[in-house]
Amino acid sequence: MDIYNVIGIMSGTSLDGVDIAFCIFQKKLNIWNFEIVKAQTFDYNKTWKEKLNSLHRSNALSFVKTHAEYGDYLGELVNGFLEKNTLNPDFIASHGHTIFHQPQEKLTFQIGDGAAIAAKTKFTVVSDFRNLDVKLGGQGAPLVPIGDKLLFPQYDYCLNLGGFANISFDNEANQRIAFDICPVNIVLNKIAAEFDFAFDDKGKIAKSGYLNPQLLLELDALDYYNQKNPKSLGKEWVIEYFEPILKKINLSASDKLRTVCEHIAKQISKAITHNNSKSLLISGGGAYNDFLINRIKAHTNQKIHIPENKIIDFKEAMIFAFLGVLKMRGEINCLKSVTGASKDSSGGVIFNLS
Image (cartoon, rainbow, N blue to C red; front, top):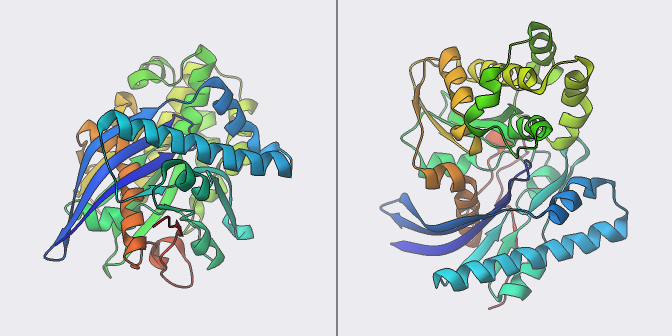
């Protein structure tokens, strides 16, 4: 029986904050079990939000400095978290925060220097999970599906509603398939900011708005939705293609939220209609958006399961901890069937202090 105590760190594109989860993984009779023992989200202050939001426009020196500073920052957060909860992990697995994701250019970059985290915490760190897959011709995303497959095998579909909606499932050949479906919180939160809210609580503002057929038509017509997987989305795509449509049509923020929620629900239903009456696990911050969940239910006939809050909030941080376990074991943690890479791989860079 193999047991691992691991810290997982995740920061999503919607800038909600840094998720830190202390998890226990146990492999017994070839089956993986997990427990999220303690977890916490650390909200970004205004300075970090602005810095992360604008870093893609910075010069090279500022970028490298921020990469190191953000690693120090993550290390400090982990130290405080461990001290507060009296925890002692075997190692740390950190996703970092994505600044660039352009797999067509064989380019992806998540800031948060693993060496800085290791030096600050004095623990071994695994980081930079996406780069190898991208260099192998893959999308470098999504990476969560192998965790879905091994840790949540009882569900036919695993849907995460974070900055983007992404889904994973096994095809007829028992290969894991996954892809980004559409933007979610990266867009919804930005529209909610027009009301000075960080997010649309339970989708109440969206519910009060009116559906705009023209906006819905134009969003649904975006080329990405006709592309075959493997495929993934990044902030650059939202800025270049999605936001101009929102700006072009003059609508109230509530009408935009209402229409974008409908768009999200429609695109999710398109991604899963080939298999009806199956079980669908929904996690990520969007699982708390009651209006969005109801629109997804209206467009599908899946058996939707919303898990306990710990899994909703910290599933990605937990799975990156698990990807770290697989890396430390020298096992595959990135599937070519998901990303389109030339081969399966064990992604991540290990900064070992032992």
